[in-house]
Image 1 (cartoon, rainbow, N blue to C red):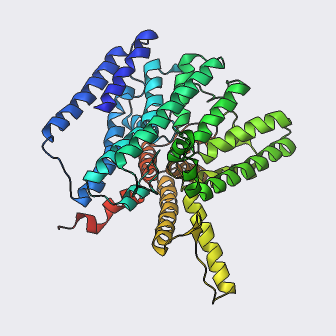
Image 2 (image 1 turned 90 degrees about the vertical axis):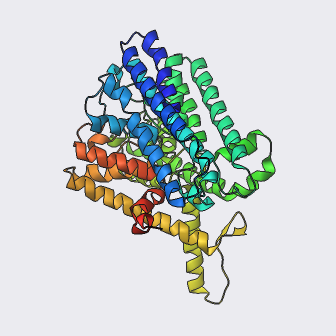
Image 3 (image 1 turned 90 degrees about the horizontal axis):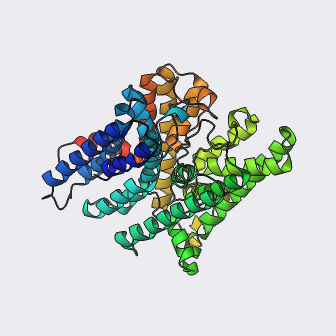
Length: 469
């Protein structure tokens, strides 16, 4: 029902710009809304879902079904007549990935452009809010919630905070940041239409653009504003709430993750800036601006571009791939493995090395000066291994579908991490239009896998899940 209502809001640009799509948008929105209404009425007597198996299934289906219905504006307006293309674009938006099959987005009707942007803003936070709201009554434990993509929510202290309070706080921060950056971009000289679409896609770590050259056309001031929006999208939303509400004493519980994220970001920016200055002959000002923007875009898995990074020095490209795999902080709208898990893995390696040198010493993995249980360390290692295994399987499936090795590697990593741009023709200002229909379906599946951090989807394919209980 919410998705249908959001489709109907796209009537505003359809009528304002008179792009001739108001009938198609109306039909798509009303159809989606009434299907949801019928489902709500049919199952209104079900107050509680105690079956954990159905809970997992519902969480996954929530993303899949909304992605399928999200294809309607693309198909009914004639933007594309191929379901594989429409599903790819819809899934990319709902999962805030940012990969696109359109090589020239400027010819797309305004209503559909807003729908693309809105799916990223809604998908970057809204769907997860529904999951957070439904999970307590469905019997899913906190670890399951943590391993699912919890955009905008911090699950590390869920024992002491009610679910409703977490939703209100993080949603408030998300809406506040959205309104603030729309205003900032508008005041910087950007048209309000551009400001709305740009904010929607960057505050959600999405990366869709309404121009063929992404954000290359923006002014230098606007690029720094967008960089700030992307940076905040990669920070824990509960942390931002604590900061804005002056509860600074709570920040100590997240200090290690903050420090790791800042060190990784600053070190990467310095490397990219120096490489652009001395290897690609950029001026210091341009190197600082381009290097800062693109590094933030990669580490937050946003995928917005101000330059064709596919033409940059190869070590920079490799660094960007590694940063997209790491991602930003847990509890943000970004994808990737998350900084907290990377930090736990690194400190676990350090502990093992110390035990090798000093077998009798007692060493522990600590996070925020507190010991991390072996159970959590094992879970993090399992998530990491499955994450890498899914990428490898995705690469193999794409190659078997007829995609070249370079394109397959870039697409698999970009779709699972949620970064968007891949390698080769799909990198930089390129797109995925040359992919086969089968490859597009595979990429759509990988996007959902990455958004739910793999485990929530993989459990559906186990024999134990379908065994009679």
